[in-house]
Length: 260
Image 1 (cartoon, rainbow, N blue to C red):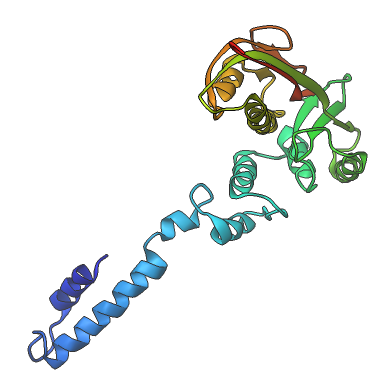
Image 2: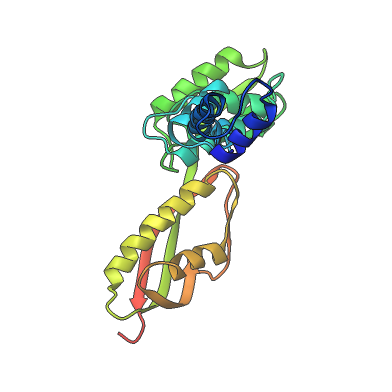
């Protein structure tokens, strides 16, 4: 609310003695109250809705909102990483040792980015949990051991549960690149490599499909690239399907400059 809107509401509600015109005692008091209330509104109330929800809060507000929901910010974790982790937890329904329960238990380990739960993977009574680290690659054995210890404590009696690392599938990418004026192929390779690493990390254990179109778009959107031809992933011009226990990681980049 603005100062004028607040003042109008105060004037309408005032039924005391004397004038409320500017310069009168009552009028000056009401105007001073409107000033203070407008400042309070702008600082503490306006935008409160955006600060109070996981989907819209940022910075320290997001840290507090997520903590209230049982998710603490990890060291070096960005707002979007924390938001995604919290929304995933809120959307899950852990109960009685179901897949969401195993996911929640492994989520207590700081150096696990996410997991995929594979019930009955080794037969009746078995549960395999495939884990990926914060960099989108296989986590260290000590991380797996920590997760295994938590799961062994919490799992239902009789369940044969194994926490294991993902296997890494290298994305070897080749293409002929048409550069914009003044661009260097080495700079394109560096920028695309960083974008590909982020792409792989974001998709790790969320899908078994590495989209050809999305990977090609990464290269087309790389600074300095005018056009791309002959784009392949692991030697083929099509999407790549991963095993349930695998994640994609950047492999060898073989870029050739068009008309070089």
